[in-house]
Length: 443
Image (cartoon, rainbow, N blue to C red; front, side, top):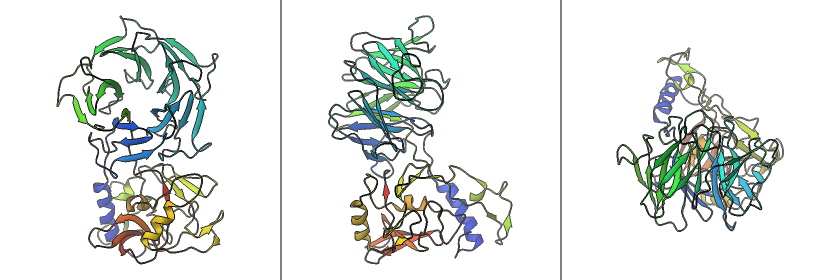
């Protein structure tokens, strides 16, 4: 129960949280990679809306020849990013959009020494986890085990494609839960429906989609959330997506036409279920109109719904990973340190000082910033108070206000802050000093 609030008000807030929480598309969304920068369409409207609500990451910059790759590396249901560079794979296992290094992230060597190798990814074995592979002039080398190492004994090799100019494509064409292979050649798609890695005109399929469009690049994704991967093309900032899955361009509104990535030099299309998952509030109690406790069964209040329950990993290096959002958090309030955050003195800062402090923070090799109001509220636990946070992962959190980076638009010179004593947020003048906890990733 939130200290300082009436039970009736809490019930109203619970209902509001359920109704107002943003709902993201269940299917695949689009994005662009260019020179180490990722522009991801989080809300699925096919347009770049800035951050938030969309995602902007820096991952892969400085690697000559880096090729973007995407996949659900850890089986969480959310697509994460990575790059392939001359046989080396750098995978963002945490999902915070930043390279933290091993063992937090993944570093593999697979495909090195193969001239013309193109990285491919997919859930080759239907386990729910994306694995890696390479395509080289019609030959596919797929890491079935998922250890990032080629083994002729446990992995597999297919001969599929090989046509001049063939581009490898992958997807769950039949909705079985297993990724299958295919190639795109000048507007023609050859898809292995059976999943045996062999072309058969009798059992596989050919589509014509993208022919005649200059500079077309094939893209695949579960555009409508049906569980089946469909096809599409990207050309100079325009996306043509086969929404109904018939392998033909039927125009809008049957199919999808989006503008995303135009004007970006060297833009490479990427797709995935970027879904920015909302963590549960932690609220488990329900109330009637008089403020008395009632059963949450059928009450329709926040306590009736447990979705994406709060979950954390203590990384043992002064950071905590939010397993729902993928954000990496500073474990201790600034000024404190140690396993129980009991060393030192928690220090308060003005808003501008807080921003500078986080930007300059050197911790775990990550790039840090002051969290948004939305992100900071996401680690509040509405089922407890004083402090209203999981104290096992964030020990010695102060029972008062912490700065966010979000301006408070109702008053000039104010910014949002979040109270970890009673689970609330409000605006405050930026010259006032409050506590700080930094975050990495997201946005």
